[in-house]
Amino acid sequence: MLHLGCHSWQPYSIFACNFNLPTTLISPPQDLQSMAPEINSKKSYGFAAISKSLKPFLIGKGVRLFVSVAVILLLARVLEEAQYAVYVSLTALVTIVGAVSSIGIQQSMLRYIPELRASGNNQAMYWMFIRGMLLRVGLVGIVLLIGIPFAFKYGHNLGLDDWLWVVPWYAGVGVLRLGALSLSQSLEALLWQKQAQYGMAIGGFVRLMGIVLVMQFGQLDLWAVVLIELVSEGLSLVIMTAGWFAMRSADVHKQDGSLEWWPENRKRVYRFGAWSGLMNQTRMLYGSSPNRLMTAHYLGSADLALFGFADSLNNLATRLMPTKMMMSMIRPVFIAKYSEEQDFSLLSDLSNLVYRLNLSLLALPIALLLVAGEPVLSWLTAGKYGEAAYLLAGFLALMLTEGMRTTLELLVQAVEKNQILLTNLIQSVSLFVAIPLFPILGLWALIVVNLLGTMVANFIVVYLLGRHGHDFKFDWALSALVTGYAAVAGGLGYWVLTLSGSYIAAALVTTVVFAIGMVVKPPLRQTEKDMLMKLIRSQRKPRIT
Image (cartoon, rainbow, N blue to C red; front, side, top):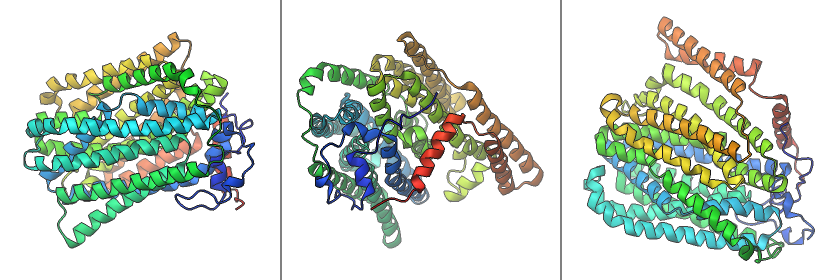
């Protein structure tokens, strides 16, 4: 039976108290120092703590979503196609650097920070937090310094010829961006959502305002975009760092626990980190960035610009999936809960729920893109990238398999069987399968091989988890229900389009039919409905300040 154990987890945590009181962005509650010392850190990831952190989480995510959509559309409309293609390659290179420099440090932090916090060992937790962040940022800087000469030597293969001089500047953007992302994820592992989300949101808003101002009073080109991103990424990093120091300084329990945890668990952490790092390297050739670079090399700047625009929208949609959007809440709760109860069936049930939420959110957009997406994207991009609608629909279908992959990885990490994730090699190898398919399928070759590779890898992970005594049972019936709603809605929408010729009417029919199905028989079990309603009601209760 699905449950969150909220009957045993009380809202007495520093984080929960923080959100019960009026605060500023980086300043902790003034009376935090006077809180009773008997606060139990094991309660930091309870139902009440989660519900109370939803407000800053949703506000921050909402602002970041709005900013990301606006920036993607503005850059696609205003930048010349050649410059936009270069920008796509530069962002892909930064992501590759992030993967190369990942040797398991960030994964270890996200795995053990919640465990230490939940067990009340704050001293060891803060020790790991500080050293982990310094190592992470240092490695990113080293990899970028080593990689810059290679970028100058081989950049012409990626269409960077006229803009090679901007590579060192964008390396600076890379250090700040990857450092800010790492810090944000680490803050989220503590459920310090206000510091994590607002810091990133403010930086993103400054980025958008910078682009708008340059468009209004000057000429927006790639160089202006790079300078704007240097400022905005640096601002996010500074704000989140200040927020972290303020929260730690006010934590009266920061000395609880003992650093003896480290020598006792060093081998365990190193083993987990090594497998996590190897996992990242085995997946190096899979995903958005390798796909972009492969497109740049084999298909040219026009296809790269089209692919990059569709991929940017896909990356944005990925952040909206519960698997990704809620990962900052899901991961620490999964880890803390499993560390306490060792109940894999609970994690399996939660994973199925998250996947069905993903499917419910993505099924309708896929149908709408296929029925009426082309004219909408053509209008939004001044006639440049309307064809991206069908690519984006394919990306969203791929995202469903990747969403399941993400939850499976979380399960594997919770039970500390990271060696299972060597199946990432299957996803990486799929990139090479796309090469002979380019002349036949064009850009679709990448989507097709990524989809097949991820599905095969997922089945193998489920099988290997079972071999280790952790049975994962996928809920086929309720997932098929959502798929059926989308298929019927899309079919009726297309039928209306052929009769009326109106894309608006077709989109309305598709949306209404899908919504009716979801309302009449939602793809949720009764226990899941009860849990979600409880969470919603908790947000409506007045807070005592």
